Image 1: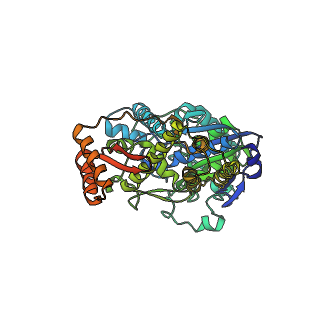
Image 2: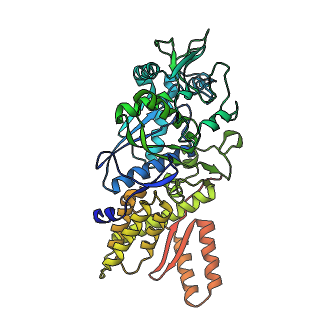
Image 3: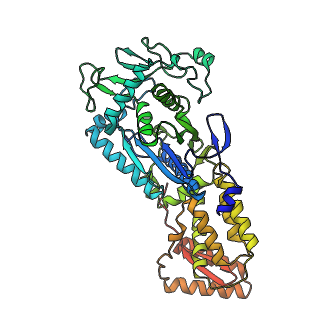
Length: 484
């Protein structure tokens, strides 16, 4: 694979510039990567799952290309307000009030829920997980640097960043000075009379008067808490350096959060913080936005409550490119699970296979190259999956080598195929055995209608699926699905 890696460079779509670029790390062989983590005030949901499966595929693809990874991910447990206009209630404190728990308990509970879900989806854990509340002193020092360099001003509710002082503010979002000047209050964010510019944002917020927050700290400017954006600039530069290789996040971060990160970092260090910005597209549910009011807001408990393997969800995400919207339906998830089950069945067959044949080495090399070409073309997982299925159907490669190829591909796909084990087979009742035998007799004498009627009865009445192969009749029990 190393020789092929040199021939097929890894190309990634850089949001900064809107084009694919050949990826090269600042330090040869080592990739420093920062991933925007969750705000832990509610259960992790399908949108989170899609985002972090993308990050996981990126991480695995980098390793597949021979890179070592140093990945940092934040946990937002303070400072993320209900409005991007730096107004409203802190999401964690709001959840604490509604659930009659402390903010710290809320953050701890939903952080655990997030990592439990990621484990079930086989998402590898970042090398460094950092909570915002553990880095308040670092944030204060960082804001002081920005202040010293002349980019801040004070209002009645906090310390704000003056975006007009940065000539290329908003470049990531495709905003230039004229576009920013043309923004109207409410078109992007609501406008405060005390803000100098519509795009200005809070670095430090003062605690509301006559109300004591659960999470607040002393600072040179007054008692309060950090703005949402500052934590990512602080923690990324602390653990990865002033300039690092890759920053990931959802497309919803492109207009506000990530431009603000860039502004903060440049104001403090004078350097461009990130070389490659990668963003995943939205997940749709039943063709629309996921929301609790539409009752299509699903989490891991909803997936498992229907008897669905979480790996089927991972497989479903792999069928779409990370920069394309993907539509979730229960039907598409069931189809993904059927495909994954078939893949697992082939793996089990190949593990048992003793069939020997002369291998077509050229074919093997061709599949390796096609898979690598797909992955190195901006993580094209749909094409990579299609290559895997072509291997499954290939007749000029032995079962053992098909298995080797698929397990190699799975280093990126992350479906954990090497761990597939035969399911404990339930015993058939004497009645079912007799029906299967009778069906075989009907087929031998050409009574196919009668044979089909028995097949239907076996499926509907006993939950037994019949499959006719060149090696004879095979059967398996249907998975029990709970009603939607």
